[in-house]
Length: 197
Image (cartoon, rainbow, N blue to C red; front, side, top):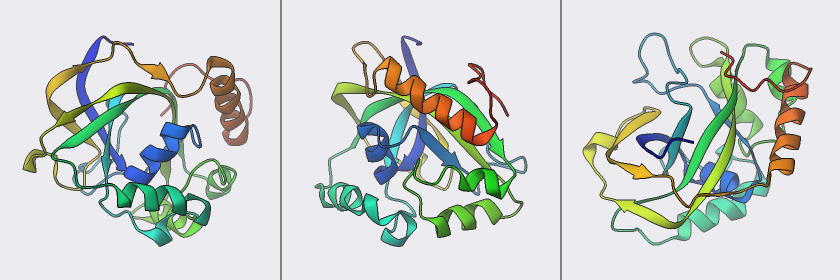
């Protein structure tokens, strides 16, 4: 793990909450309208998770995730953006087969309608990032900025944040089990340690 980074990945706060509990170990991504002609790319293997409420609606997630959604929406508006989750991408799959994507049901909090809408948007396909998530005991709070606005996946923080003291959300054995199961569901065979795209 790198000692510090100023790269962050924008994700729904409810998805961040699910990742924080170990409820899911994947991030599904189509890419924002500002991703450019080539669409989303895994530009960084390690990054801070940047929670956002943008596009986050009750009907966009499964009913089992509604308590998480209620929890994140009931939190008071902080004076800045709290960053306490760090993700390391262990594998990345570009899924072009809708049936393969359906096998991930139960592994994420998106509703089926959201999966279908995102998969079909522009050209069929979605990325599934298998991520190992770590928690910072005391969140870093950074000021909000217009620089962070917009429908984009990646943002650069005003300063690099150190990764010392991070604690894994899942222990090694549990995470390895999740990663291997996802690998089997998508492509079969043992988990690939590298990035696939």
